[in-house]
Image 1 (cartoon, rainbow, N blue to C red):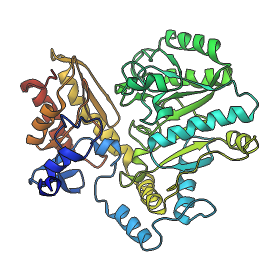
Image 2: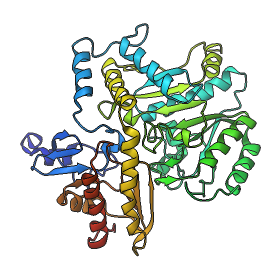
Image 3: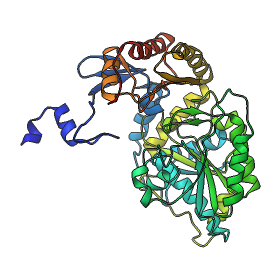
Image 4: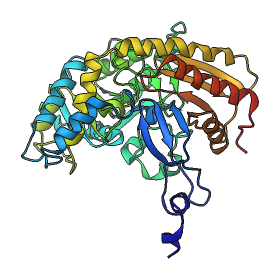
Length: 432
């Protein structure tokens, strides 16, 4: 009976487990009643300018009429049908769009459920590829420190083993080979030392390495670091030299976030396997995709199993595919390049915090603005300050950052920036 008579927020705190949240000391959760454009409306009446694009996915803003219409039309036709032995127009259209817009050579598409699953699929593709080629010893993965690729087990195995979110599970995961994180920033002069150390690891381990996985240009949830495009070029060259597949995890960076449609374009490289998610549906529904080359798909299909060993129940969900098609149509026909460039220009105002005694670094790339503090902030405290200021910004660790919807106005973006400045200048925001 107690469960019935508690109010909604009390029930939420007592019974609903939110991401990365304690059930004994839960972080506050603010109840949303509506979202429109870049504004989130709370049940208590506050309207918040969204600086997070709902974990970087709502690039076109909330409640977009064209995505709404696509989903309304689809739900009246068929909201779901199994993808085994059946297909449908939304999935066909989506795969056509993805093949056309992604880097060259990626012409086989596996539609997945979420970003983590897209990474799982990519890893399974790489392992099954080498098994099918008669090289089962190539069964390890290689990556760099500071990365983040998701919360499922194979994805966790290539997240940062020390400072990542998953160090508790190290004894249960496959052991990966880790290279030092890239040292050179996006705009810094290139130093060959980064690639020299990387090549030493390739030379030592390549006979056991199935694939090298990396987030192109931006290390996202692992620290929001931007590294030099030449490093990514070297990754491609070394993978070719040592016969290792290159997996690009563009779940966070894909669809324009860094100022290029895909972050790989900063280095003019094409991976062997590409993972996409987040902004794929414009933030409407969970959907992801893993693309690979014909060589990989054909080799797997001609191997011992004769098929790729993966098949989610909701694979190719028509409703999600329809949302994705509408979202990608908006990107193709819209002004995302101008929008992202304008956001990047306005975000330069964050650099005035560079000299603040509590700030370690400020960095901006595309529609990403990061203020790295010298010590961790208290999420609940800083969140409350931001809500009072009418903005939704959710920091983690030492990072106070924003990745807003592309449709944000300059005034709305300036409000977000001013809120960051004000909180850092005048508030007690530190974790204990």
